[in-house]
Image (cartoon, rainbow, N blue to C red):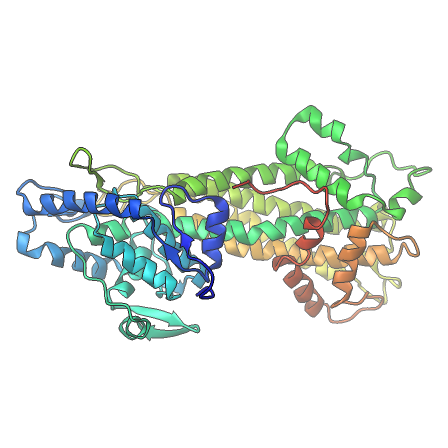
Length: 520
């Protein structure tokens, strides 16, 4: 919960920005719904209530689901139909989704239903908002969704908890949802016609997982630029490839911004100035020279993915949809998460490539023939192995990411007795991004250690002010390794500073550094 004196966060249905979503992902908020949204909710609920009272078959209101859509349900059983739907569909397996993902799911579902095209009563949206405000974390298993018809199983587990069944996580411990709701002063949700279907038919799980990955990777990519620049100096590379004229001729925006970031980070380096004249190397290896082209292309992919995810976060993705102005319910397929799946596949490739070029930079640093530094970055090679196996670890992680980057969206298995015959696999596409980011953060942790070690051999020359701050940040936890020691704790410490944004802070503090991520 936020402090009492802080105002609530206005949950604007259909108008959430990327910064809004980042705020919702962070939690510690109270949500407020505009009154204009409540009128739209009431109007769509009235359409459903009329359909439930009528005799015409309406999918999900007075019929079964999936292949059972032709089965009519008696009027006396319409509420029970929704309860049974949630109970039967809460069939997920695997580890629970993390609290930030689940809380973002709750907020996204509330925002989607509040657009007034789902036919739920306002108390359903209010229940979601109350759960978010109370910091509730329904236990949602991570596996069991194929990304159409929506994220059925995970959203059913979320809904089951709001009904007072299932479980919630409290301080990482499983507790019955009925107890947790009672302690929070929240009445269990009672479902009416179509409401169970509206709650589980949608892409909020895959979208929340994808946004979680995006927000997690932002500081990692920024750290990659700082570490990559430090490696340029450790290898006494040229800053010529970052000349703005080079990148203007190509016109790729991510490339232009990344090159600018490298210029900012390297500006004022005495190491660079010392070998500007008389260096017999004509060109640097691609892992140094082509960083703007590679990482900039990855940045463009991530920016595109962010735009897709913002649209999806604001979308109405259940079925059937209610158009209150016409008094109609229309069946469609907005629950199909193909946009999310393709965005996540693009993110996966970009994440893998950031790690892949970083691994190549480590390999370059430990190769004395290329870097002109001591073999394996140790003063007494042979007696000491230096960074030999740290690089092997990075190589293993980069290789693992290549397998994880295989597109999930190209797979499809028919479900529901072939009624749902093409699915997106978006939920796995999004979920697999976290281990990939974990791998890249570790690769960058190794590179940071290696690049800082390389800088040690170039003293008393100093790097730029920004890169000296990066070097000092590492040395707070990891001293130089002039003879072999247990390196795993150093890798863990460096990786933590990559993942938590401390190293990214070096880049963000540069006055002329471009804004890498989309503006609100």
